Image (cartoon, rainbow, N blue to C red; front, side, top):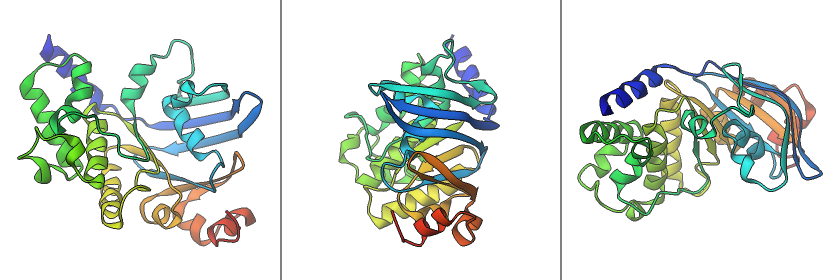
Length: 266
């Protein structure tokens, strides 16, 4: 039985998301319109950055892709969010399964008050996987993917809370990778970290896009320019401009975009 579960996970890991799309998306919190009719396609195996001033709707839009806004009082959405052509807001969608496919990394590291090993294995165990050899291999593989294995391999039973902030964030990314997502959403994942830890996370993001589709919200335009293939500029709930990062940062089409990236407002 365990072997069958494991085989299913391996099979699922082969399937990668080909297309993320928003069609006519509006978001309301009671009467307030936070997102004002956005159409967007996000490419697979690329890093797409969302930039814009605080309160512009970029985090709200990001969280639509794994339905994290469902928990917010007064939330209502119009339009469609499609993953491989399937509307993830249909009633029949299994949200728990969706969140295995679409992982989330938050602004502040949020390891569980458990051992390093248990943090990474947690998602697999709640899926019912008990094969110790398989769990051990997945923990090691996930920690290697985030370049943390060599730092913690002799201390896997140590509390994750004892790690540095940067190590905790890499551990949280490893925890996300262990359940084999196709997409990784990151909401300002380095804003609470020091420059050295930030650089490590940026290197990691660059490596991970070979296997995953990554969407990142960042307040740091230099970071967006360094790590992203595409950048979307949001302002007051609207998508002002969306293009290849190199073009958007050097030759934007919209005056609002130029004003923001040159520091004239925001």
